[in-house]
Each structure stands twice: as structure tokens, then as C-alpha cells.
Image (cartoon, rainbow, N blue to C red; front, side, top):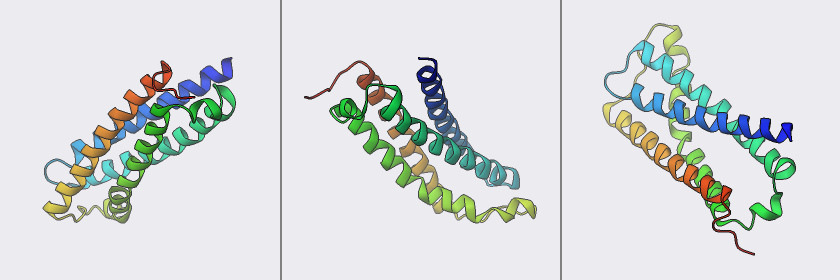
Length: 152
């Protein structure tokens, strides 16, 4: 029981860390890029990546060993929707992550990352969509927890 509670805690903590990292990315992508903003974007994206991996690993463990089991979850429409949303969020995160990874040396050299204004707007839009999908995933989690949308 304690292991299940700790797994739930880590799972929720990872989800909140993803939300915070995306919020930081959204704020840092507003306005003019600076060396410090570039550095913070790289850091926020690293937190996002670590949190996403943690969320996946702990989520799989919860489904397999700590909660109701895979048979139950695979008969839950909100669970299936939540998985689809997380895949979509992960796919959307590829472009920002590749952009931020390409800047790794830039802050260390005390240079401002290069990003055209239209590319910056696109990245900001992607992060907006990721956050919106995350909100829907949280809704799905709440529905799932209450047994809504279970089909035999």
C-alpha cells in the first residue's frame, strides 16, 4: 500500500513538473531572447524530459503492479484518451526540444541563441497546444479515477 501511494506521488509530481516546465518555456519564449532566457529554456526542457520519462516509467509500473491492472485500464475510454493525448504531447515536444538542444553551446559561449521571430512564434504556439492537451489529459485522469467511461 505504501509503495502504491509513493508511486502515485511520484507520478503526480512528474505530471506537475511537466506543467511547470511547459509554463516556463511559454514565458521564456515571449519577447526577445537573451543568453539567460536561452539557458532557462534549455534547463526547462531538460526538466520536461526527465519528468516525462519518470511519468512514463512510473505510469507503466502503476498500471502493471500498483493499481487495478492493465485489463482494467484498457477498458477505460478516459485512460485510452489520456494515452493518446500524452503521445500527441510527446510528438509536439520534438520540435522545441531539438531547437533547445541545438543551443547547448550558445549560453556557455555567452551568445544569444539564434531564432527567427516566426520560428519563435511557432515554438510558442506548440507549447500552448502542449499545455492545452495536458489540461485535457488531467481531465481524463480525473474521469478515469472515478470510473467514468469504463466499458466491459
